[in-house]
Every structure is written in structure tokens, then in C-alpha cells.
Amino acid sequence: MASPQSTLSSADGGGAPRGRLGAALGALLPVSGPARWLAAAQLAGSVGAGLYLAGAPVYFLRAGDLTVGQVGAGLSAAALAGIAASVPAGRMADRYGARRMSVVFVLLQALFVLLLLAADRFWLFVPLVALVAVAEQSWDVSRDGMIAAAVTGSDRVRVSAYLRSVFNAGFALGTLAAGLVLAVDSPAAYLGMLAAVAACWVAVAGLYLLLPAWPRPAPTDGARERVRPLADLPYLLVAQVSCLTRIGETILLVGLPLWIVSATDAPRPLAAWLTGINTVLVVLLQVRVSRAGDTIPSAARLQRFAFLLLAAACPVAALTGRLPAAPAIAVLVLVAVLLTFAELGGETARWTMQFGLAPERAQARYAGVFRLGQAVPAVAGPALVTGLTGGLGAAGWLVLALIPLAGAALSGPVVAWARRTRPEPAPS
Image (cartoon, rainbow, N blue to C red; front, side):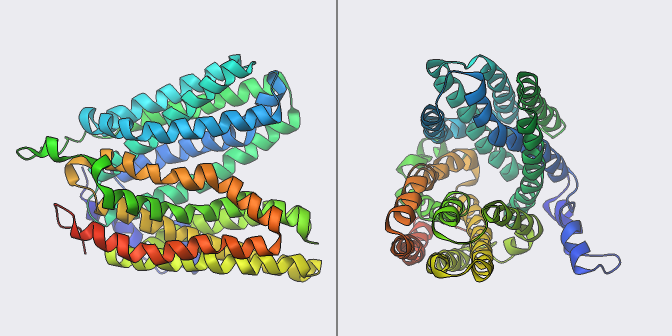
């Protein structure tokens, strides 16, 4: 297996000088050895995810006797089931091996997607879509365990950043393909879409089998009994605070589109354009931003900055309700950029906290527990964002800004507490 240094060596330069755009695009293919296979699997998986998330909700309405409300309720229940599955998934990945469980979970996800062809009634739809979400979340946790096994230290953050850039690129391709399926809007097209999704995820499993079966870290005497991530209150609090930055994604994908349509003179297609700006920036800049937060102290500073960017974006968005179309477009683009840079910094800090504050022998278990922090932004976030901005208008944006401000205030103290309570020294 390549060393962590050689795995990432080509990301840091060497060879002939390149222009800025060339350097940014080249950063998408910098890895070698195991990290390259992880990136290839991420690309295949993200194309499938884009197809599924963009096309499946419409399929559920077309193929079965389901209402919009039932589809929404089923997807919310599935999100909760997926988050709940992250903890046992982490235990299984640590016990049986992260690569093995990643293969199992992604194959199960492919199988459950095909079973959705039978989800023509609500009582069938809910459990099947929940199984897809459970397998997906379990796969994510196991993949974090593979990253921890493949590389060490700050290189875990760098590899995570590469994988996220690749994910956004593949996800965009998948959503474009889903758009073609929706344009055709036929049973055969939807059948082909779900088959393609399953094929993408089967391909992921095949690529994972090309990776080495890394040995699990040997526990020290009595270590097995002491690893209890659910009892690690400082770590749990860090997870809750760190994942709060993900409310920015809800603002971008849910809050801004509804605000644009209901309260501004900006053209409606701007909502999709803002998402495109976000995708491009994440693809090009996530790796670069990851270098600014590869230690716990630097990640804590980056996280506070991300929260402040989120807080600043909210009142700026509120201004657009009183602006003519042209300046409203310019200001909304600025809001999207602020939200994107908050996302870039927040994700970097989250990876560093997750890996750096967890014991080496239990990375997957701690990764599963860390994902419990996603419950608030994933479940309560959409209702909170739409309720405040839709119900209170411009004033709601100001109230919404209090959430990231609270995150900025809590970030430093909870991270400092977690560092003091580590049985193993946290990287500094």
C-alpha cells in the first residue's frame, strides 16, 4: 500500500507550472494507490446518488398511488432511520472490517433500490425507502472507516476533501441524467433509471474489492471495554455543533429557492443557477480549503469562521426582498458564495474533528456516533428554515442568523473540552 505521503504527493505540485484553472481542475485527480480507487468508487456512487435523489421522488408519484405529502413523509422517515443506523454500522465496520462492510452495505443499497420497483403503495414505500437510507448511511460510515485505514493524520482530511469534490462532480452528472429521464417520463425510462442507479452502486462494490483488506488496529488491554462513543459527551457535543454548519445547505437548497419565488423580483431559474455555482465552487475549492483546517485548533478557527459566514449570509439574503431584479440577482449570488464558503470550511472542520478526536482503534464507531449530529440540520432544518423565512419574511432571516451565531459561540468551548478529555492525545 502506498504511504500517506505518496498517496497525496501529486496534489502539492511538481512538474511544469500550470494556470490557476488547470491547477484547480488537476486537483480532482491527484491521488494514487488506495486513495485513487476510493475516488473512482466515489465517482460511480455519486452518479448513482444524483440519479436517485433527483429522479426517484418523481418516480414515486408516477408509478404508485402516492401523494406529494406521502412521499415527503416517507423520505423524512427514511432520513431518521438512516441516522439511527449510523451507530450500529460503525460497530460492524470496526468489528468485521470497513472494506468488507462497505461492500456489503453498498450491495444492499443496490438491491433495495431495485425493490422500490414494487413500492406502489404507501405501506410498501416507507419501509423500502427507509432500507435504502439505512444502507446509504451505513455505507457512508464504513467508507469513513476505510479512509481512516488508508491514510493517517491530516491526510484523512485531504482525502475526504478529494472525495467530496469528486462526489459533487459525479452528482451533477447524475442529476443531468435524471433530467433526461424526467423529460421522457415513461415507465421504461424510470425502470432504466433505477437499474442504472443499482449498476452504479454495484460498480462501487467492485472497485472496493480492488482495495487492500486493511487489518484492524489491535486493541490494547481492556480497550474494548473502554470504547463507548455514545457515553463520550464531549465528542457528542462537538458532533452536534460541527454538523450545525450543514444548515447552510438547507438554506441554499430549500430556503433560497422558496424565497426567490415568493419574495423577490429575481427570475425563478436563479435558484437552480445558485446551486450550480455552489457545485462548481465545491469541486474546485474543497481540497484547497481543507489545507486550512487539518489540525484541531485550526479546524476550530475555521469552524467559527464558517458559522460567521452563515450568520452574515442571512441578513444579506433578507435585503433582496426590497431590491429590483438586477441588483437582487447580484446580491443572491453573493449569498450563494457566502453559503458555499461556509460549507467548505464547515465540512473541513467536521472531518478534522471526527477523525482527530476519535481513538484510532474505533474510528468507524466514532464516525457513526458523529453522524448523529446530522439529525438537527437534516430533520428540523427544512421546517425551521422555511417556517422562519416564509412565515416572518425578512425578519425571519434575522432570527435564522441566531443559529450560526450560537454555533460560533459554542464551538470553541466544546472543542476545548473534548481535547482535554481525550484518553489519547488529539493532534494539535
